[in-house]
Image (cartoon, rainbow, N blue to C red; front, side, top):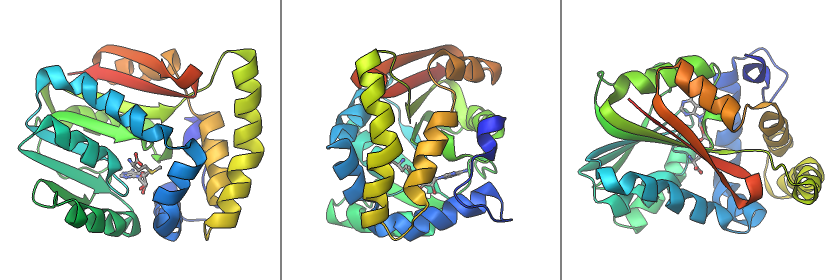
Length: 242
Ligand SMILES: C[S@@+](CC[C@H](N)C(=O)[O-])C[C@H]1O[C@@H](n2cnc3c(N)ncnc32)[C@H](O)[C@@H]1O
């Protein structure tokens, strides 16, 4: 798919390798920049995702593209038996593991190296899978989603949180300006990687959103797939079931 070709750097490494390298480079500043660039709104978005999982009380949860573990940490309120976070960036998980220790969640949440596009779990393993701002970075979106479908238990739920695109003219104008100029500028000033926050803008623009992403979930056999816009369409929550 076209968006799979949007990569952080223009070098010969695979998208997976480039993405891992980029997140390793910005891992120390990721949480700070996340809060600065979204004015803390991202925390409320994750809480809304977790609320969707409450009725099913999932016991085993997988957080794909866990990064520094924020989505996994938000899922702890569901009181599951275990939460596993996987990521291709060791640097991001190193920061995450420190946070888990400080929050005394390191017994409940376990972070390990893993690629959504080459999962090592047995089929039908998890009651719920969450992915926060991760699917946009997959090298092969359809392969990643089909793997998630495999390891989800029948009746299990997938929740994806991702940037979307506003429809309101005023919000859209602000959104375009913010993503085109402010995000790359702040990213360049505060992160050690010149490309990281320009890649963010490029990848968000190229990525399918709302019904287009729902259609991709349906194609990968997820049932009852829906989306809900957040903050005037800046982001969206996608839900699908097996
Ligand atoms: C923007 S961060 C999101 C981190 C976290 N989920 C959050 O909500 O803040 C994206 C993460 O996706 C990871 N990632 C990208 N492609 C991946 C893949 N194929 N498998 C696993 N993790 C991946 C990156 O290494 C990075 O840590």
